[in-house]
Image 1 (cartoon, rainbow, N blue to C red):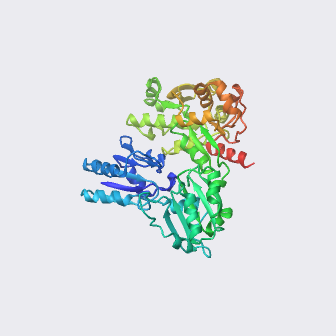
Image 2 (cartoon, one colour):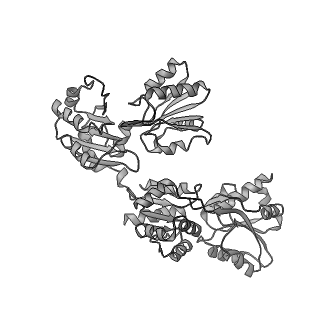
Image 3 (cartoon, one colour):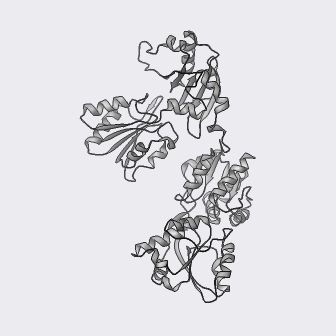
Length: 502
């Protein structure tokens, strides 16, 4: 089966439910330049990913080659997803690919997508129809086949219509297209807009009128992909723009959490308009020795308390417990303490509620919360990272508590910096640096070097999740400008947004 899937215009969140479902079961994904790379992450790990993108003067594979590729992969008995920007049947050449599959006797399905023709203007604050302004909208290719002897576009008819005109993929011919409309009789004072890389975090919009929009776009160095909108509705952008007015618009934020944990912070910052670069400073792996944890799991009834200091600790502990054929009933007679709400939430995912969650979220506060609830001689299991601060076990020992410190995971430093982030560092494009633990600070410095870190921080706003992380930054001569009162990811993202709002 071949699925011809519309990926939407750029924002990966605009993929349809069915489009996402077929990507997630694909054995082969054939994608073009305009499909968001984020969607490729949804494909199975063993799926074959093939790029066939086209841009002016550079085609990875001609259309006939793409058609044959789809036929060959389907004949091999594979589930193929042809991922196309926008909608496959709106200037997407999806019809040609479907005809090639039909001629080969192969099954196919069309999964429509959100067309750039309506989505890109919407993200620029331009409705393509509007009561009293436009009851007609026309979609036009911005670059006709250059081998044609004469234009198939009825320029005089288009010029006379009072509706909205949307030209797709027409940067190269922008001046010529505007000229033809004016020559055909369209008022050169008609509002117009050119939107580059619409619906992405790199969207840029320039506005003017039909008579000067080409010159304005050229001066702004507008590049493909871009859409031209001509019509009275373009004048509504001044009141309706929303995508490019968010508080972090145009800012580049570095997120240093583990790859598995970065998604929440990335989602919150991106929702406020930031371009996020993931630079994982930690990789979560098993401890050097499972023996201490296995021994503790076989004798859980001896512990009055089990303490977790991170969501990673909860996940590793529970996976090991269930891997031994046990379940949460093994903790039935045990009280549980956690360091903060994120850890408590991770515990709740396993059907358990914490008995103790401190008001503030660091080891000193957890120790203070536990002190009135423990007695000398109590036995406690502290499930945590292989390397961690000694505040908690030492403080509990002073209270007479017998603490078994059991490593359930270890955090290692990755080997390098992702290429996209390295390029941003080199070009000085970083506006925000975020750190969610002391380990992320130490490891980031180890990855980039202290001198380079200080240089990056000098030109960026530095955000720390709490005072311990902030103190670690101070050790490297980098005081954080942002530090929320609550030591949580949502609070950190909120503090970054508030900083830039002010």
